[in-house]
Length: 171
Image (cartoon, rainbow, N blue to C red; front, side, top):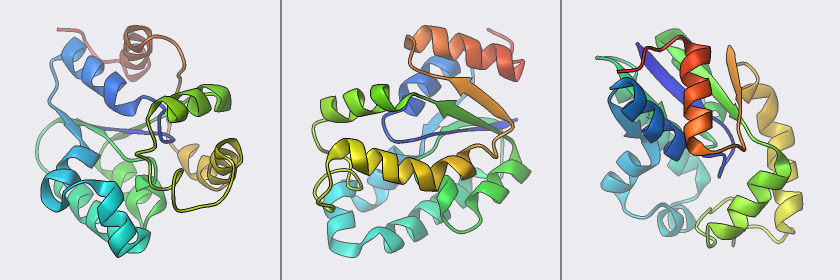
């Protein structure tokens, strides 16, 4: 079974995904890390080539993960927004929305050090306003996921809850 974890930037998709993979013995893939292996660091690449070109690369890499064996994929925050990615993920496996409160996202974004191209450097808004604006656009798409897991707790608690909600067996 393929599992796709979606949610906003800084929601914890990668850390929870790694923990869930360890808990259940599944293979874990961080979509952004695979993309970075191909194009280099995302922020400078995106600044040079733009978001639309990045989404093309992201969609192509996602396409490679839609077939084949069992995999647990932590998607980028915008992955479900591009092209027909959400429909493709829903058809290929289970999609889980890691739903984290705005305040937690803001605190994590501040701690991230500014490496989020859509939050820092490309827009002149206050960070909290930028998160709110992007969430208003993205949340309706995120909510199409059949499974919604509340985030904001510890990584272990969230991974355990996600395993239970997905009916996954621990190793």
